[in-house]
Length: 260
Ligand SMILES: Nc1nc2c(ncn2[C@@H]2O[C@H](COP(=O)(O)OP(=O)(O)OP(=O)(O)O)[C@@H](O)[C@H]2O)c(=O)[nH]1
Ligand SMILES: [Mg+2]
Image 1: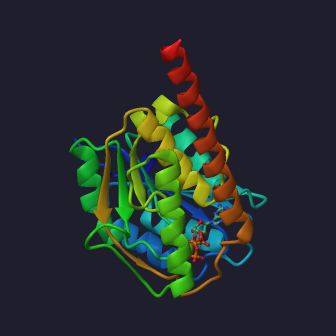
Image 2: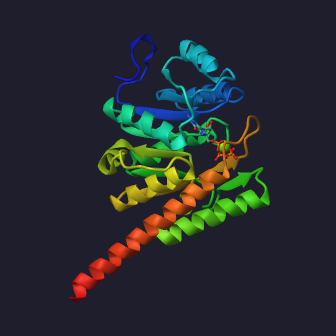
Image 3: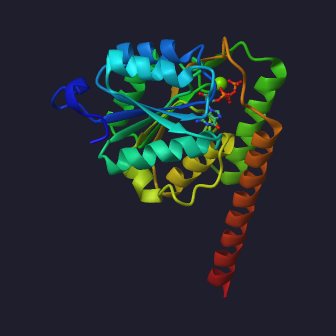
């Protein structure tokens, strides 16, 4: 059991849910996020995976773990990327028998109030639920035009190259059914930034996942600093292109075998 003892208060019949929160210098927002999560989904357990923040993020998480319960902090010593943090959390959660795995940023860009609807969609049968900025009703508040354009075109590129038919493949607010993650496995996942979100989507779809996009409002972080970098964008671009080329080569090979 990942979280136990006096602090556990999962009601009988509740689907075991683990919310993974990667943090890197998020002292200004983590308390609000954890309180909002507890209000929105009181039965869910939370795992914060921190990569060496020295701004008080971990101390705040520890204080809230004592106060609220059902919160666990994983402290790692060096920055290993968002994707690596989620891999760590999900691997532990799968071993511990959680059925639903949630991804959410710590910077309050994602509103925990949207989670009950997203979790309902998973409980109703979706394998992956994406909190989507690019379906009707979804939107972004506070991003510059160039940032929005980069995200929009990045998404279009990934969808076309990988044939995903998903409007927001880079979204970082999600619910996965743990059975689908077990099916495609976390070991071979290579990317760490936006590429991680695309890679998880791509692998899930290749395993036959039912993906549902639910509109959300994404708000630019109000405090703290962005960890977005050119390297993260480049990683996603290179990996998506490589996967697309690999798919194309596989299709050509099977077409030739069929013709021979
Ligand atoms: N553990 C861990 N968390 C990270 C790392 N990089 C980013 N994060 C966290 O991942 C989440 C998303 O990172 P952000 O910096 O908000 O990236 P973004 O949302 O793509 O971009 P902006 O919000 O515009 O800055 C936040 O909760 C970060 O603290 C990392 O290397 N390790
Ligand atoms: Mg952010």
